[in-house]
Amino acid sequence: MSVETVTNLFANAVLTAAVSGFGILLFRSDSVVKKWPAVGHFALKASLVAVSAGSLGNCLTLSTPPFTEILLNVGLAGLFSWAVWFHIRLLNLKNGPTSKHRKGGNGRNAGQVAANR
Image (cartoon, rainbow, N blue to C red; front, side, top):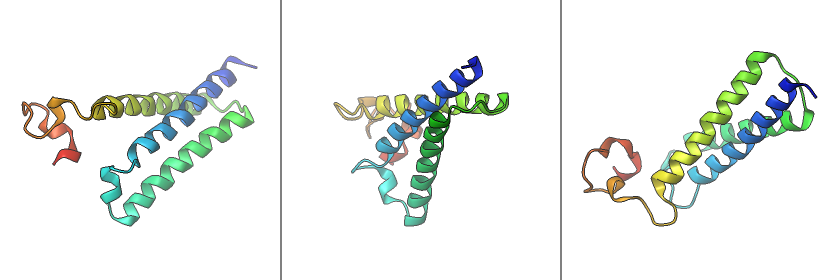
């Protein structure tokens, strides 16, 4: 296998896992996304499923796409990996949100958490 194929395979494997994890975080039982109108809720869910299924399909076919597509896949894998890390830290799933993310915190980060508005 060429370096490009291995890079694309790794990027798509990370992308599949990260988008799946992001979807789980967004659609957990107490998520703000559950309160959205049905059309927005469904559009987001369908988009995440499409990205995850497409990246899994790319893993299974072991294709070697053009360099720009490999770069896009690497970028998306990094973006969704960061989003999962950020939301896990933001939500602090073990102990609930940290004090700076609760209502009535120090106020410095008040605009960062739409869920607490």
